[in-house]
Length: 295
Image (cartoon, rainbow, N blue to C red; front, side, top):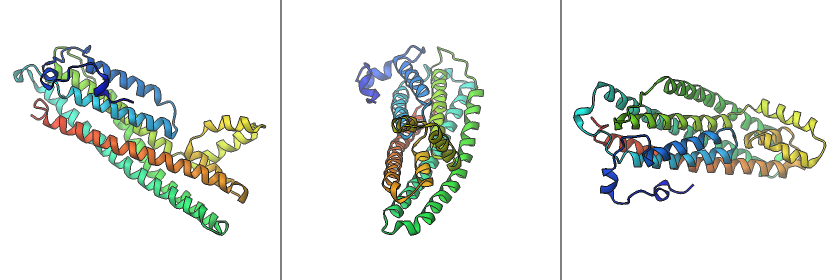
């Protein structure tokens, strides 16, 4: 995706940008945010590394748009703020912290997953791998199982966060800039949580479910080209599970290739997540520095 700041036909002058009134939902910045959110929603149906990496990249563009919005004046006058507005401010700030925490914990899970995959790959490349294959695979699966418990717990927490966001209704007062921004930021937090949940679901797939699915596919297929078409039914994590389950000297090269694909996929996700984390920090700082949200 291109940088949103370059793709939007808005004034480049900082003073001009700050003079724009965010009094209606039809403002170009808010429309662009809604467009980015809708694109992300449609991409969540696919759970492979490439699709999730694209989702993380989309979130990065989305937060660039959010930063543009936060450069606009959020209230026409200080005297217009009230207790309801203050409550919205506190909720927005609280949500920004939670999203940062989720991103940080997900980064740590990715790092651990990458280490597990690399150890497995080293074991498969080692001379005389046959004698240690079982122990290497067991170690990988054991680590996956421990991480999966952590990921399932995180997914549960994300679902609760989503439910809470959905239950918080914001009556959109088109003449109150702060309320419009609060509504948008709540939608941004919601789609961010959904992308993180898809990432964790991708990584936490059960090895037993993977092998069962692959066994079913194998029974249904009679031709090799059909197999390549149906391989899209599983993601990279499941593909490695299946290869390990059927490992033999004849399939070692294929298994190594699948493990390498998974490792590259995880590295791509890690890079995108690191960039997104910086965007989230920048947005958090913008929220705190904004004169309307800092008091």
